[in-house]
Amino acid sequence: MRLVVLISGSGSNLQAILDATRSGELKAEVVLVVSNHKAAYGLTRAAEAGVPTLYFPLKPYSDAGRPRAEYDADLARQIMSSQPDQIMLAGWMHMLSPAFLDCFPNQVINLHPALPGAFPGVHAIERAFEAFQRGEISQSGCMVHRVVPELDAGPVIAQRVVPFQTDDTLDDYEARMHAAEHELVVEALRICAKNSDE
Image (cartoon, rainbow, N blue to C red; front, side):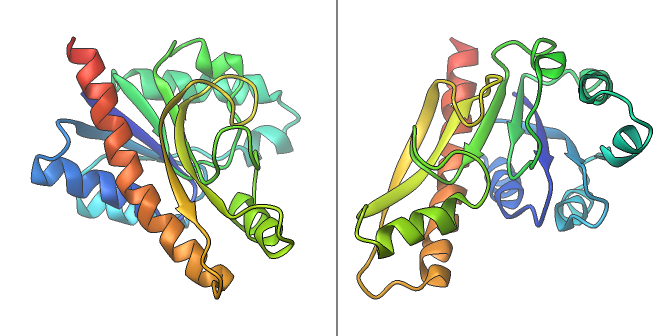
């Protein structure tokens, strides 16, 4: 399975994917890592693993008053040359419009640190932790889902519940969530690889 990974930050989930491909746990090859932030440490992780990288910022488009769909279409063109079987959004902090998604039907998946239907959008872990402190929920979790134009919607491929503990700080909970995410991205990609083989 040829895999393109889109990131915006440190790339710890990317590292989990790279480790799983190297160990043979995941039958896939990361053929390109894309970031919309030049300083994203994930680009360094990719380069150290010998994976080609692409820095593709939105700012020049917005500064020039060019429409978002134009950025998405150009990004899709850049990625197409890598001929991906799957595109994994692992901490990519942009919603993708149909101008991108229509180029890769049913091939774009996203990791989101909340359970289906809960806490869409940014700061999901913090918002869940605040809800726990108010006594509204006892657990949250993470999911990998197919990407559709609606934010953090789309069919779920795999999910993992991460319960809260009574004495949790936000840092404690965040650390457990990230550990769960690292396992979940590999599990979800294994499901995708198996489905593409059938």
